[in-house]
Length: 615
Image 1 (spheres, one colour):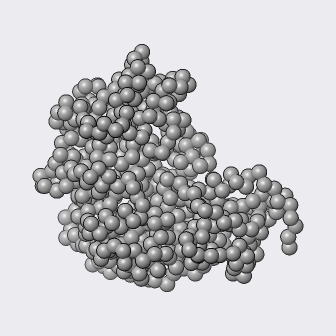
Image 2: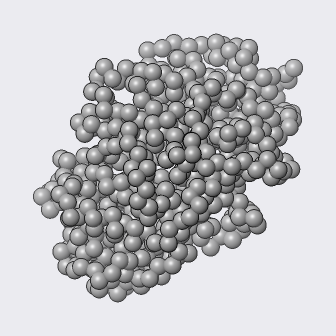
Image 3: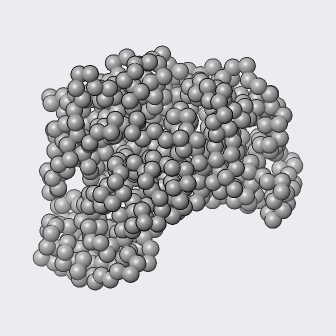
């Protein structure tokens, strides 16, 4: 099969409305398609404001909110404990001051975070940004091996850690001679957060004593967030250290599903580039801009994305700039989120693909008061159109497909919804202001015109700097012309709207054909009895791979393997047939960001070798 093909399904017919000359949408969407080079560009805004560091931008936003009585944070897991913007702003500055004055913080140091979402995390994160130093979040689910590797790789000198779940993991790592040596190579300070003096049910103090014993012969010290906030003073300037646009802001480690995790570096420039429309708004008083998000204005935002992920960090900063009250959620079960939607009258809600599946399958509007809800946003993996249409009809909401990567934040957006406009269902949007997009042939690398499938390439101010101390991986990902190779397969239509097909690394080779499992999964998910499905290739002696589907059936539903196999054979192409069969499973595992855990299913079949002959 050729590596560039016509899309397997027709583009949705829900038309987007192009902006008129006096339309405020033109502030964000001025799309040009270069039909010679096959490049889609967003040339708005024409003029960007003078560079500001992320710290300066946050300082301006939070300083303004500190003059009000607005609540900045609500911890939904701690009896709805609240923190005003004023207290949040001041405590963050005090924490930063303590780092600088008590511990002689240097600009070149890297600060590591290891915790689930919490008030203390939010305070210390903003405080760290105010210093002007680089930070890196470690996934809360990481074990002692991953934690050690990340601290060693980024040369982390300060570790801010949760005392409940993560501190025991650190203790176990430090008890290992091998891990201890790697951790303490650069680490000089451990800061413990989320301590509750009134909670006598935990063994925090015992673990801390153990750590003190382990560290007694080292240069590494232990301190506590509450003490540092109490001891810290104000800051003369923010950020404390001068910050250039190319200075590193954050290092986000990839999941490592295809090898050792890599530290993707975002500079202050690339992070602010990702928030480009907000930069424009703050520098421009055009009254038309007040119309942005007018249909989705909300006081409260539910924040369940882990701060340890790129999307979590990015969205959290946007929520602050939007001056919303952030309800921090760790328990992100859908029932809990919808309860909070009802309680706080939330208008716009971010959900995972698994959440969306359950929204489509159930009538939650009969269980919860969801009248305030106007928009659902989802990213992470492709959602079938029938589920999207079901949700829009059932809950009377806009449904927005999101797309982004750790390396290129907010480069593609559905911008029409910001003004209450119609947009194209199934599309993840068009390039953001300043961004460019093209599609290249998977074999030749040649740029492709509209409606042709290939690898998605992006270029613009949102692009990451590169991988930390990994020149080879950087050069494999960013080419000599500055294009970021996403590893995703998709196509754009004649208006520049992008549609995602699958990941290149997920391609299944069957004979001479390249098969995208997401296309088969999307078709199987049309069956209302299917809850989740993961399609993988099973090694075959002659054909390369045969295709198998692992399916989780909806509770209370029935389904036969033959029904699925026959349906795929009757409706999809010869190369997409389920020749390795169907297996029903109790649960389809997902990653911490709710993507299908294909790595798990590939591990189940890696030692199989099919030999059956087929037509």
